[in-house]
Image (cartoon, rainbow over all chains, first blue to last red; front, side):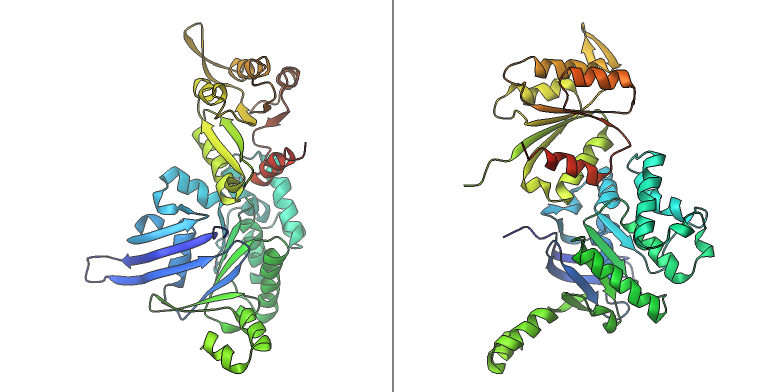
Amino acid sequence: MSTPLVKLEDINFYYNRGKPSEVHALKNINLEIERGEYAAFFGPSGCGKTTLTYLIGGIETENTDEGHILIDGRDLRGLTKKELAVYRQIGVGIIFQQFNLLPSLTVLDNVALPMAFLGISVDRRRKEAMKLLDRFSMTSKADRFPSELSGGQQQRVSIARALANNPPLIIADEPLGNLDSENANKALEFLKELNEKDGRTIIMVTHESWSLRDVRTIFYLKDGELIRKEQPEKMKEAKKKLSEHLYHKLFP
Amino acid sequence: MEAPKKKILLIDDNEIVRLMFSNVFWLHGLDHKYELNTVGTIDEAFVFIDNPSTRPNIIFTGLVMPFKKDGKKATSAEAGFSLLSRVKNNPDTQTIRVVVFSGYNEGEYRTQAMSLGAEMYLQKGENMPQDLIGIIESFDTP
């Protein structure tokens, strides 16, 4: 058996622990995501899905109350601050709902920024950033500032930036939230391509069921609990092959 | 039985370089194929190189690093060059492939490294994580 890229064991996470405003945001979460998987955390607002991706992304890791966050077998909670900082730069690329582009930097420099943290020279990172922009048909906007772009264009820049340091894991937090349906469709196509062609592992956080169309594993969350895991393709295949009776036994 | 993992030793006095290297191995799944050790000094490096059971197949070394010369501490490119020539002049270790990486793109350094038997001379700041993976995997084909 290969080691899963992501494995969460008995995760418990509280906001404001010990205070009257305490929230038990994640309750005994256990899950595994294989390398090359396209997974989604699905649930209503406040279900804990974003918090969960922050733990995997190394953002709230230090504040986790209980459990293990294993990335390819190694527990993020055991890393030093410096190790965690490097992990955040090369382990995971995050596509934020609000895009989070720096307004004072050009499109090109926004995409090149994560490479600067690795000490890559200015020339090399601009060259790499240009290649990424080309992939998303955005080279003509390289010298523009984020405020001069449409929402869909900013989204593409944000995806390009997430890819900058070639991370094996991409987290897309409500990636379609601020897009019209045409751009939302394009964004889904990009994510599918990153998964299928580049072999990257993708975790999408969403509350919209239509955005799950290409996802292979869906984790349903409610009130901080993981209530169900579904693999639609496997279910469809099983349904084709098995009798209804057996199918219902396997997937009640 | 599984083939033994290829051993790689990284020598650099910069902790961030060492962390980046080991994180690339971990995150891209190279840990399953290679055994990586990282050290910050030449002295520590030879603890691994001199012992046949920890001797690396591939060495990545920085060039300008602190080292001891005639009992005194110094920091210069001589650190990397002395390591390279010691490895290449010892019949037990001369088959180790050595990649030198440096912040200096001086032709002189490059020429000296190559003439002492380095496999490659990489310039720091010019290699993305994916390049590193490519270089390591290119050594798998003889």
